[in-house]
Image 1 (cartoon, rainbow, N blue to C red):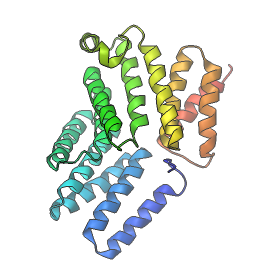
Image 2 (cartoon, rainbow, N blue to C red):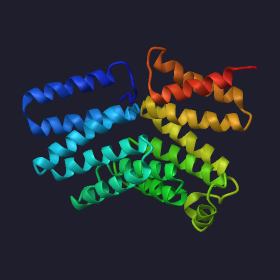
Image 3 (cartoon, one colour):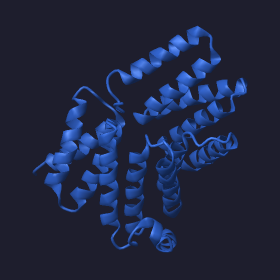
Image 4 (spheres, rainbow, N blue to C red):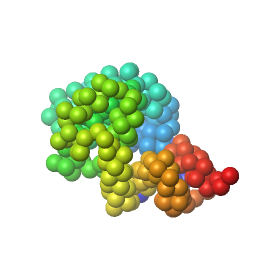
Length: 267
């Protein structure tokens, strides 16, 4: 499956919603709204995706669909993360995760931990973010819920870099007590981050998950740029951006292309 914000993914999702509305089947509409919301949010269309997730959650709640309501609420929480509302997002995601656990299923748990880690990264709660990432990776390694594993690895790399940047002495102290889980300690966090980003690239390429590959490549290219490896960063990022084509636009592509432009600029 090609996970990417291509020219047809979003229009197809929106068209499918209209067909589902016309069908009059509330369960089908709720499910289609969730799938379309995920595509929108993967492309960082936070407002549209959040609205779809809210609609799905309301419909599921109205008809007593507990797990579909929890999943839709989880995506609504992710939309809040993307809109910079981390405190509200964390509360929403944690409520959704509690509801999901109450049904006795672990389906979507790896996604949930990734969304929670992203919110905690945004908040600067770095040690807690690493706890969420490790929990998500544990789910991915013990179940078939591995679709979002590349993003979990990328988030782990970003969290380690932020800790190494000295943003939180409290987090640095906490993570030092977790060396066995994190790796080799704090001093070589950049090296660990490269390992995480490379793992994210490897997994996303194997799954042909182009949007996740783009995010991993951008993180690694940014780190290489900081370390003086501009040529390597340019080659890596240029190849991924080229795959999408000039006509494809998404928030992640805009960010990646801006970084590629800086890497290409010889002034």
